[in-house]
Image 1: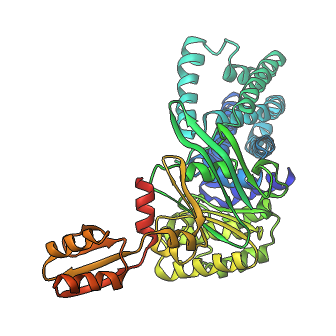
Image 2: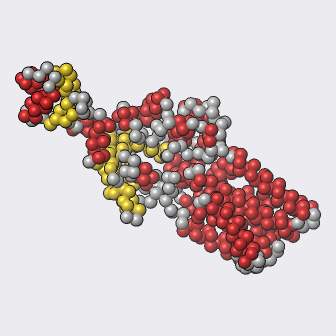
Image 3: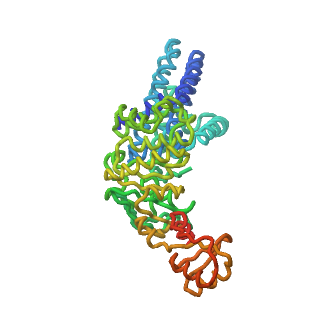
Length: 200
Length: 291
């Protein structure tokens, strides 16, 4: 397991586009953190989702998932390692980009966000393992957030992103609901892990 | 050893692989041949645990791929056109895979040198040519020093020097007791490399046999050109030969060269050409695959 996590971290670190994207998005999140803790939490959540999706879905996009499964045929171990990797990276991402929030006195939203960000990373990893295509997930995430949770639900329905934002704001029930969503997503990911890998 | 036992893969109404059984023995290079869409890649992916069989078993050293301990040290595979992230350098790609295979960085550098990628090791694999990606894929397969190699079209994109290098590498691997299963459409090249051949068509095995045996059973064909082809044709047929033509010369099966020469002499037809068309893998393959 540790070897798998090391390999995934090494892979992330040696793909320039991965760390450039993380750095740029981190700079944006940190800038929003100087303005408002709520916006920072939102951007960190999107960042955690993006890190997870890119980490997992790129394996399917470039078919390197086949190499991963050839080395580690037990697919559940691979998924668990990917969850650990994305959780670790997303948490560090949140911790570093939120320094401005702490400096501005937003200790509590900072801590609440650090608690819920790993859940978002696990949720994103599971979603990517299910869908396997990053473009579908990013468009789907944006459309879902704007039309379903934003316009229709006014961010009040107990749906994933609304629950994440509530949890980041310190709402314990929001955290419970979001953990529930992440568990459901992970369960579906585990159930669909055995699907064939197509050659194209 | 690689074993496929009644391996079947069905997609709704289509049976991509249909009750396929064959073995690839240690110490031998086995060629896996079939036309496009015949089920080659699906079979190889089932052997490697990437695709689930509908029925039947795929075994490597007596176990399904998923049950192997340290699979990278038992099986090396080259799939598709060389798999790697285009934004990662060749060396970084190999190091990430070496971590999983339990191989050292010294082995990575050795393999980079062996496959001729030392100078390009720090370049992004997205900038590699197809041949370079194939060399990287071969290096990836060899990381764990596995005794079993499964290679799907590994010679694609390789230049003649690369093909000769790959041929020697695989021959040496088999000579050292390793098992090699290779699919390729470069049949002339494959004929110089393989010991055994498995020919499939429409998902079923048409022939699984040592190559020498395949050549032995293939009918010897004569190529005959003379002044009066019509008369020669009738003379050969009446002597029991089976005659066809490619519009340039007669192709005769069922007669020896000596008999054909005597028949032409007796018929009073001067010959301009009488050659034995030795059986070649491509012709046998096309006959069996089309059959």
